[in-house]
Length: 231
Image 1 (spheres, rainbow, N blue to C red):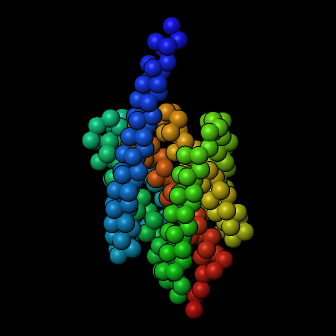
Image 2 (cartoon, rainbow, N blue to C red):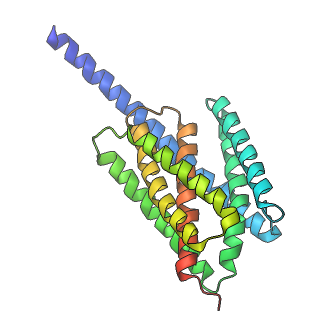
Image 3 (cartoon, one colour):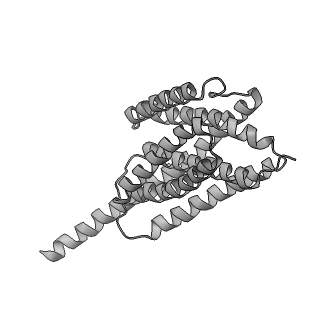
């Protein structure tokens, strides 16, 4: 009996492994593609001086969240079709527009382009490190999710509060915590694909894209605060 079962187990396990690797490959491919509309959106935003927060920061934040969650709903609903991919690319273009304000501020610094390059390189290094760690760690890290979610809520609440407080020290703390939390989220989200917890490459791409976006913006804000040069 054992001899008749083991070959089936091996074949079944191998099939699962192939499926997970395919989801991961598709995720990485779509993630790379999503950088194109992000760059286009950022370029357009910088060129036109686009800003959601110029008038009322609070209303800008509420409008941003409404649009973002609208995209999330659509992507989740159509994640198994090409419409989901198009919505994801539309969302990344929108996020590029939202990024343009931070990039414009950085570009007004004399060493702004260098800081942007450092933030981009640092984000890439974090991604490669977390991806390598996810592929080697054998432990189940699903329990990490609730702690990371709590950390994300703390960051969000502190960020909203700092719209009015405008405390540089608090902003530094928020940026530092965000880098740590969203770097860990990269590990968590890639590991979910590898462990079979996430089987759709569109939603997997969305999760990892948001992780990378937050790491990049937080790292750039930290670099500007610590090493920005107005001269």
